[in-house]
Image (cartoon, rainbow, N blue to C red; front, side, top):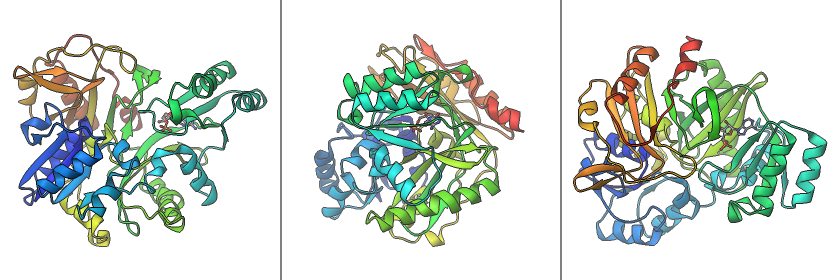
Amino acid sequence: MKILVIGSGGCEHALVWKLAQSPKASKIFCAPGNAGTAQIAENINIAAEDILSLRDFALHNRIDLTVVGPEAPLVTGIVDEFESNGLKIFGPNKKASLIEGSKVFAKNIMKKYNIPTADFLTFTKEEEALRFIKEAGAPLVVKADGLAAGKGVIVCKTEDEAKKAVSKMLKEKEFGEAGSEIIIEERLEGEEVSVLCFTDGKTIVPMASAQDHKRVNDNDEGPNTGGMGAYSPAPVLTDDILKQAEREILRPTISGLEAEGHPYKGILYVGLMLTRNGPKVLEYNARFGDPETQCILPRMKTDLLEAIEKTINCQLSTLKLEWDPRPAVCVVLASGGYPGTYKKGYEIKGLEKARQLEEVIIFHAGTSEKDGKAVTSGGRVLGVVGIGETIRHAIDRSYLAIKLIHFENMHYRKDIGRKALKLK
Ligand code: AMP
């Protein structure tokens, strides 16, 4: 089978890496890819958002299956465009992707179908939002409705912070159209965990759990990022809590979307807060999560291509996922300054040596090739995955590999996985 993977992040490198292990995969293209995907696939210089060029590429090259990594092309309708041209593609269509593309849409689905989530109100007018903040008091969470590359959520400890967040979105239009409607919601407390599932719109098959680290600095300090590290499994998600989440959250989400006329097929990612009153939804994603995928896929023994085909063909009731019981930890190496401004183009040294370590996998994210060398080209540069008999061992493998890698202004968290150790 000829496969096209769309995207250029660490998640897409992990997808290409896993798909390449399938006996049915004869050739893999990645658009646009990174220096890591270039080693196992053929990178194609087409942006992930350029849906029409991607469609033409898939038609001309007789691609048998396209797998979409990032959210932007899903939300703009790549699945609809490919399917109407007879091309097989993995992911939800434009309407179903609204579950990630519009937080207001997602919250309204949750409200209508009694899916536990933070209490919320929506606003388009600054004065009304400010008035509500004064009445409600802090803490509060302010969210832009549309896609904002993981930066559209501001957790506010004080009323002042909440007012600033509102002005940023509704007055200064920092997120453009994506912030023209906002949500203000209660701040939930508890442990966060991510549950990713395959779903064909009827059957839901959850993958191994994972826990992300969103804040840029150790001890969960500093601004939110796309994710600075993850580990799988997340011991905090017990079998009982997973069952509760399936019953109260996953099933009603999929059946609610179907009832609304938006049947959902693909990966449903649910970010949960495990509160004292049970699991509650923080967010939905319409795709594999980054960096969770980098530590989930190395643990998946099942052929990913088989799982994807069964999803597309509505045969998920026959899928049984098998897992390596050993934990995996992914530590993200970022450009200093991320998630704010940062410089690019620094040579990445030590990759070859680090790659030779056993129980270590290095996934590229913001990297590109220059004169045969890997250089930094994005905020999150690499995901270094360690695998071990215990979570402690997995953490040690990852940090051992990191010691060998260097680029100018490299920043990473030193505490990835520490929470899981406490729970052991
Ligand atoms: P989201 O993109 O909605 O998941 O938000 C990004 C991050 O903001 C989450 O992973 C949480 O750490 C935090 N967050 C979002 N909503 C809430 C909430 N209601 N209460 C507490 N933290 C939240």
